[in-house]
Length: 114
Length: 113
Image 1 (cartoon, each protein chain N blue to C red):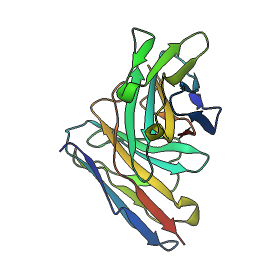
Image 2: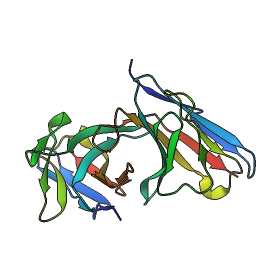
Image 3: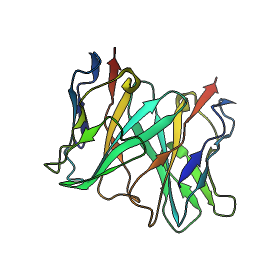
Image 4: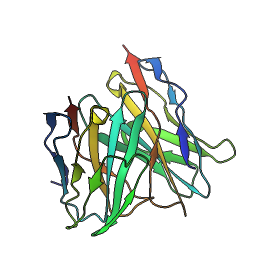
């Protein structure tokens, strides 16, 4: 069965410092990996995805993520955090040949302090 | 404007009273999906639809029904709501499943007393 783990409920970082939000996954077959962000009282917005190709994926708002097949990870990163990045971040996975369902992680709350 | 709309945005109801949450998208997307969001549990997929008249169960389908009679609409039906269905519900759509970006609606906050 497919699964996604976001091991940290909350990540705290100072403005201007680099940030990392962790995600690991378990699927049979090739994974398709996504990051979404949710601001308060809003729906989810797409940040970036890995389908195939280059392991380093660049997305919206200066975020990037690296697909690591051997560690089954897809951590979200940003070189310099902004206060406005404070939000709830979700990792999600679907998989080739595993039907058409999506599995989301439990979410990680990012708090960027001035 | 490309968007996914949901109605109502907020709903308070009582146990056993049938309700429908509507979802509509104007992007001609094939794939549509319903999720519920609960604290500490993240988003869990309820049902999804590959196209008109094609639906399938997600992770937590019990107590829910869906239909896809038109490509743009994907209503979520709770025939006999119970308090454990109190949650925040999101509809989403995309051109294709698996590899395509999903566009999410604004959410429907449901309280079942």
